[in-house]
Amino acid sequence: MADSKTGRSNRYTQIIQHVFERRFRPGDEEVAFTRADFELAANSLALEVLRNLGDVVYSFRYRIPLPESITSLAPAGREWVIFPAGKGVYCFRLAPFGLVLPRSGLDMIKVPDATPGLIARYATSDEQALLARVRYNRLLDIFTGVACYSLQSHMRTTIEVDNPLSGALDKSQVETDELYLGIDRYGAHHIFPVQAKGGSDAISVVQIWQDFRVATQKFPGLIPRPVAAQFDAEDVIVLFEFREGDGGIVIVQERRFQLVNEDELTSEELQCYRDVAQRFH
Image (cartoon, rainbow, N blue to C red; front, side, top):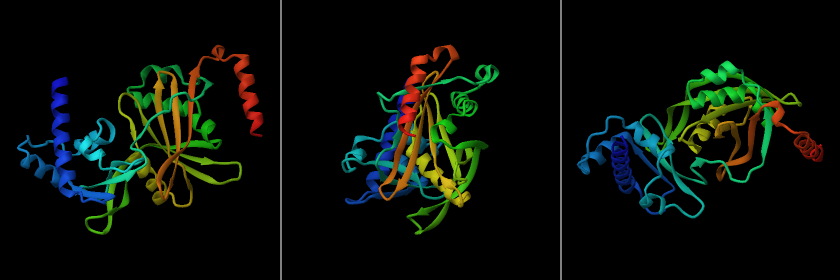
């Protein structure tokens, strides 16, 4: 199995290198290509025909790094990321980062675990368990300071994206793991698309980019606030919030929450939390 995965990874690397080198010109900040380019690359390199063309893009977004021959052509502080650009169309774009990864040394906030035992026992995947813990422990409310309500899970929809090959708007299918609505103390309404990842896969900045477009195109009157959730350990959850500007997407807030039994939260820790809260009020 490991040899099979290694062979597939090597084949994908050869193909993506060929596609990039064929399309890239010095000074480019965008490099557009289509699924047909994968087939042309496989034929040119005399490689086995790919059965799942989409897996090439998925792998380089979430699982394996782009080859050095591509990453070395990105300027300092930026990296190449594969974005959707229409039906069967993709685009390498320069971004501040490609994967959403927890920082080391971040302070941890303990939260009494309110996850029902049945849910904790029978959640069928890491992602499902993560979303359930976020929901039942109201971590989004705590993280954002907004009263949040789950609207829909695993929302599949289409968004409009710029197709650099046609020069027109095109459609791209996307999926958001969970969608929350929120209301703040001023009465303003917020939309929180949430992406969750468990296991070995990481969250890609592409998912956040897509979620900004889901929020603004499907809920234009609400404040868009995409969030990412990741397990950092079995009972430790990291939440991220993002902002999109001219320089791309940046992380504006990151917090680590540890779900604990009530008796694991000491009086000293509660006093520390009170002291911190009073400094901001």
